[in-house]
Image (cartoon, rainbow, N blue to C red; front, side, top):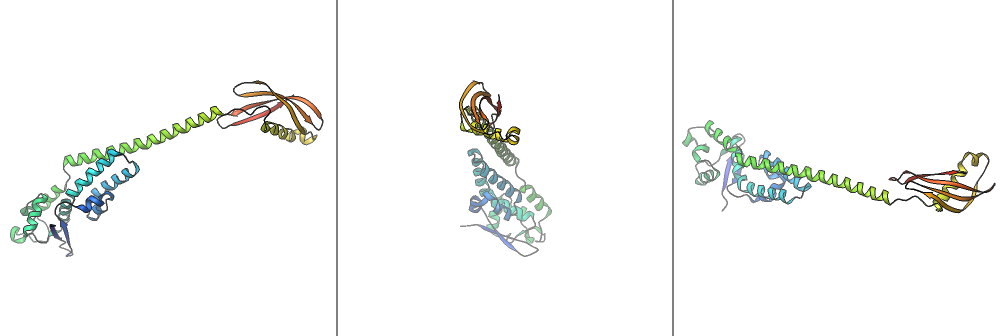
Length: 270
């Protein structure tokens, strides 16, 4: 049987019920922090929302384990924390003399005498907690030192793992890109002396040269291309150039400008 304890807002008359014991709602939905925000447990709502964000970005087994343990803990303690929060905010017990209320208060960790607002028991109007009661509730609302320390350690660990994971990904991606660029650069070779690409480049260069534009000299064909010499950054070639002015043997070279980007230039000499 569910043990539901009614709390009343003395200013508005609103009544809310808090279950005594385990909360399946918090176990199932606290991962987003929404039920905790609705219960005005804003600090805990922020903590669970932070954990949810971290777990979404960093699906680490250790982080998920911490989150699961925290969810189970809040399912056991959430209703108790909600009840204390209501009392701290000025709500009163709607049925302070009820045996069910006294049993719930005992299970929550404070006696009926300390939390009861029954005028017949305390002689204090049932509109606000007594000074000792308020002080007691405020004291109980604080997170125990070991629980607070555990939460801080868990959050710091998750943040550290997130930063390390993100930084590691960035470094790994950068290293992978660098290796890929280096391998690509190492695999690049200059075009051969007799390649169609070089042949067309020489024809276009002659056409756009000052002699080509003013005198009208044009290369009609290039034959008998051969490599004379070569090193890591250049090729030196020779070929027979057939132009509209006659045939002539000319030398030309192919050199890297930026091997990593695959750019080179071709120069022609007599």
